[in-house]
Image (cartoon, rainbow, N blue to C red; front, side, top):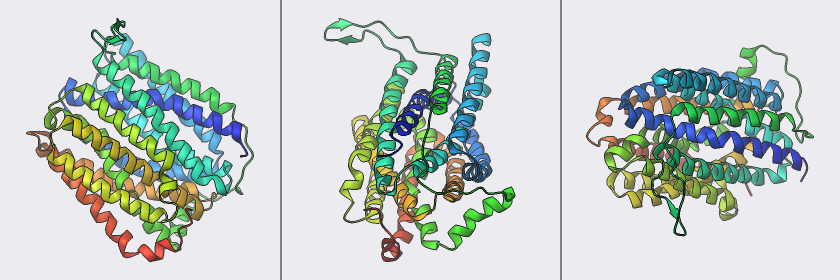
Length: 420
């Protein structure tokens, strides 16, 4: 496999920054929901941030296709390091980052997130031989979710602390809960480490790219033009995103409230759900392509979507913490599995020259749906009396609706499926 050294550096940088980033994204929703009891503020903030990302996503895609993907990675890590450093310094100086500091970090992390994965996959396609596409997407998922497992476990410790923790009969030092500014400082340091790792990457391109000198509007427009001439790619790319749409809203907005009001549990269960989700996602990265290699990507995604409907319906009905942990494993498997199958399929049908802009179109439509859901779930009805269960039922219905066009066009899309 060519560019092996580049892979190692890229995956390591992604894991390092993702570890502390995962802790921050775990801590902030819990801070609003439980610590300051303002889940509605967080819901509206999340919805507004998502809408702003609607415009940023389209621009980000054009940047990725115009400039070096390596330089784009460096830029977003520099931004992350500066943001986390400033907010953390403010927290150390005043003793508390406050609501606006938490909002700034969450919004900035979403800003980075919305270009990070576009750039990661475009870079991956560029340095990967076609026959290794599924391997790249699978390894990306395994490493990313392994990092999430560690950050979930660390998040549980940092949010709750530990009391009388023993291993093999021996007491371990007590860990006190961390303040947000301490978590943000750790996150900022990992961005700095990632900067040095990314700067060291050297690679040989596996895909042809040419310079584009057109204006911003023309470059953005080309992504829509490509998809207009390839309607099946447009349909598949959007409908297969359904699990990811509801998952992000669930994890980033609903889960703290669901844990507190529906499961009647604490931050430990909240972080543990993320931990079990990551286990399922890692399992998907290890073997999902192999499981569905004969039936194809579309069949596999439909199976995973149907399973997701089952998961959300059960989550809405059950109040068992143990059962929800099992559902979290399944949810990790379905979301990550669908993402591996979907990304491999997209790699095989979209040229690297256009991958950033085409992916940004999918992401923009994804953001529109997420913004609508997050705005709906920010209503007071869903934030009291355990009514968050109805939000989970709605998520199940959304995934079921997205299955319909895929089923109707199954044979047409499947004829293009080269995921094997």
